[in-house]
Amino acid sequence: MENHRTVKIDKISFAKEHSFKVLNKLHLLQKENSMCDATLSVGGKKFPVHRNVLSASSAYFQVMFTSGMAESFADHVEIHGIQADIFGVILEFIYTGKVEVSEDNVQQLLPASKMLQIEDIEIICCDFLKRELDSSNCVGIYTFSDAHSCLTLSKSALDFIHRNFVEVSKQDEFLQLTKTALLQMLESEDLKIESEEQVFEAAMRWVVHDLSRGREALGNILERIRLPLVSPKFLEQYLVTCQSASIKRMLAGILDGYRNYQSLTRGQQRVHTQPRRASRKCLFIIGGYSRHVGGRWSDTSSLYTVEKFDSFLQTCDSFTTVQMSFARSSHAVASIGGLIYAIGGENDSLIYDTVECYDPVLNSWSVIAPLTAPRVACGVCVVEDFMFVIGGWVGSEIAENIERYDPDLDQWEVVGKVETKRFHLGVAEMDGLIYVAGGLSDLGEELKVCECYNPVSDSWIRQPDMRHRRAYLGLATVGGFLYAVGGSNESEGALASVERFDLDTSQWTEVTPMESPRAGLSVAVSSGLLYVFGGRTASEEYSPPATLTAVDMYDPKKKKWKHVTDLCFSRCDFGIGIV
Image (cartoon, helix red, strand yellow):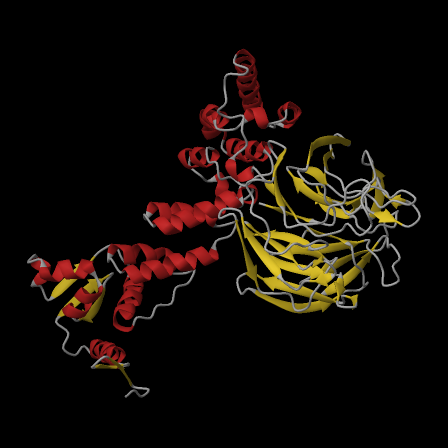
């Protein structure tokens, strides 16, 4: 028989609060200096203690009180290297199991708990610092944890630095790194960067911050930067703008020597010609439908298939990726934390509320929490590790609600409403705001309306209209600009035109058009380049449009399009996830 005070396992009964009561009584005895058998002097302050309680909580004290050394028999023992107030916090934890860790005490509490071998406090301190990690303090936390041999905290801080290297390199703490620590970072395969130029810029900021230190380390630094992946024009421009004459001379000499060596060993060296592992992006092309040339209008069966596009090798592969559980088209796809989500969509006129999650490491799909309502032809955007689904059809009407997904809770919730109802729209994120452009209205008319949604304030701001009406378009941000790519409208059919929106001038301007019109395409950005995948052609007078395989790339700096490769399967109305 059980009650709220006891629990019975087999024939043995346990009092649930017995250990708490004993610990509480011991704490009371210690506060009253009752039955204490030793006094510890720490930082000039005396603390009465029970030897057996401290020995049970700490291997340090167990050795001290049982080893037969002088401290084992002394009534008064001095503890050095710890402040009195910090020891008071630790002693309180020993007797109560409670500790308050803060920014004010954690840097003293962690080393003190390691010295006294109070593992629980060490873990609590490390967990506190992990939660506090940001771009401005991660280098300091990494250095601190490394100095105190906190391996899990050190790894967490280093992982944070690698994932946010570009932002971290702009902080003051980065400039205080030792030469050894900097070289280890520059050598890492795990730096999350868009281009090797970002590594070069970060390293040179460190160099010019302390010129005597920088000159001595420059050669070692350049050995760890993958110079073949750095644009020669970028290096020339840096030499022009470099403020330090001595660094400029050294850098020019080293780079000239490197170029000569590179030309002599062309085709032989392989070490630094590959991008860093973490910067190599794979784009997963997911679902959609396929219709071949000469096919019927009814040929719109959704696809299960998934292809992987390697942005470095610029090749497509459909053999190594497992298929989705549900065939779907006109769905939305987004990536968070290395996982890819396929959201809603349809198959044979059945609209889904199902959401699948793909893990590229395990190469497996799993079904997660469904949308609050079935939805198709919607857009999705990621802001601050939340997914926002906007627009599309819900049942028999255009969706009005905005849904947000929290991957930590595996939960969807309605968080707002759209300003303009639309489906087959374009959605993209920039600077924490969600931009929505084009799409079809509730009257079936193609739109050129562009709006901006602030998920923090749940407010919309109307932006200037695009120059062309577009539905089934692609929308992406590259280099601080918003690009609206392709799509279709009733008067022009499928579009080859591309528009760019400048936030500073609030103007849309046309840029170099694609080589051929396409609608129902998907777009993605990698290393500052805009990729366009698949889609469908303009329809002939009596025949339906065929789906496309072409993968093209736009370089905003060169203002040129280039055909890269072809998909394994032609498809349109699909989604792309990037990891």
